[in-house]
Every structure is written in C-alpha cells, then in structure tokens.
Length: 122
Length: 148
Image: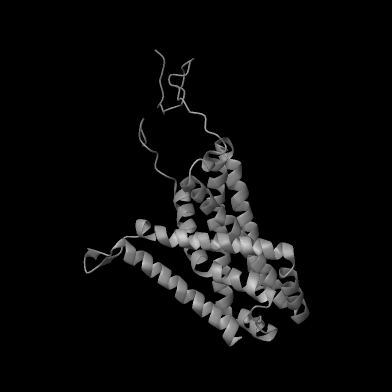
C-alpha cells in the first residue's frame, strides 16, 4: 500500500497501456515512415510508379498480410491513444479531465480497430 | 476522538473539518513548451502520435479503395495528389520520421541487451534499431515498387 511520500503502484490497466504504447511505437517507427513516404508522397506525385492494382489487391488478399496489417493498425492506434492523452493532460494541463480524455481516446481506438478489422478482414 | 483515515499529500483527512495539508502548485504557463528547445522537441515528439493515427486513416482508405476496384484505387491516388492531402502527408511524414528517430535513439535507455553476460553498449543497441529500420523499409519499398 502506498503511504505518504510514496508513489502509488500503477494499475494493471496502466501497465498494459504502457506495454501497448511501446509495441505500437516500435512497429510504427519501423513501418509507418516508408508507407507514408510511398503512398502519401511518391506514388501520388508520380515520382515512382504506384503498384499495379491487381498486384496490390492480391497482396492485400493474403491472410498473413491482412493479419499483420491489422496488428499494425491496432498497435499504431494504441500508441496514438497513450501519447495523445498524456499530451492533452500534461501539455494542456487538463488533469481534471484525465478520465474522460482517456475514455474518448480508447473509444477512438476501439472504433478504429473495428474499422480496420472490417476493411482488412471483411 | 476524530478518526483519521489514510492521508495523501494534497488530500483531506477523513472526518476532519479542515484540510490537513495543502499543496502549493506553481502556476505553469500553457506555453511552457516554448521556453526551451528541448521542451519543444518533446512536445513535437508527443504530437507525432497524431501523424501515426493519420497514417492509419489514410492507409485504411487506401485498402478500401483497392477492394473497390481499379477505378477507386486510381481515384484514391488522385485524391492523395491534391494539394491539401499532399501537404498533410508531407507534414505527417516529417512527424513519423521524428517519431522513428527519437524512438530508436531512446531505445538503449529502455532496453538493456546482454551478450555473453556483458551489457551491449547503448550506441550498438541504437545502431541495431536504426539498421532494422533501414532493412524493413528497404523490404517494404522493394515489394511495393519492384515486385508489384
């Protein structure tokens, strides 16, 4: 039990949030820059020829690719939620609204994850 | 006798009429992060998460377009080439690169790697992460640009 002057032990939910934040941070750092560079900049600008539709559709139809991309999307959203709620709470000093901010962020993660599952697995 | 519950700093005693402790909080400006360059980088690093979330949205729109057929895929690429979306993607690219660089730079502080009982030097841990980033990016680019 935490006494005066001691830091309270983080809850299991908070520990899980940190774990997911780290996993999401790692996969996002490894994969997201190259995907944004290609699909966000180089392909639309025509600097590089975009992948052929049939080839890309075949790649996205592979079960392993679908599951990996779903994992990337869910972990990336969990990473966003954790960092964004701390940015709002600490950066904008909204400590009194910590609960609602966390609830909204993780509700967005849930909605985004369902969307990703429908798009990738549907 | 007044029953006194467990006290925390800044909390009031259970059963007491007056707060037993008060904690002084020095007022902090909303723009504290503009005071130093390191603070600014810290906040920009935290805001990079918004770019990560934008990537998910943009990517799921791409996958939806691919599922909808060649015309929808072409329309998605045309929409991505409009000035507003292009600027958003360029800003997002800068932020996700900032995220990757700061993430891999901080990795040695979060991960202690041991080889043959000895800790691997922090620079080697960071170099391993940056190396993995280059290899993964090269594989993804090769698949999307060369294979497809």
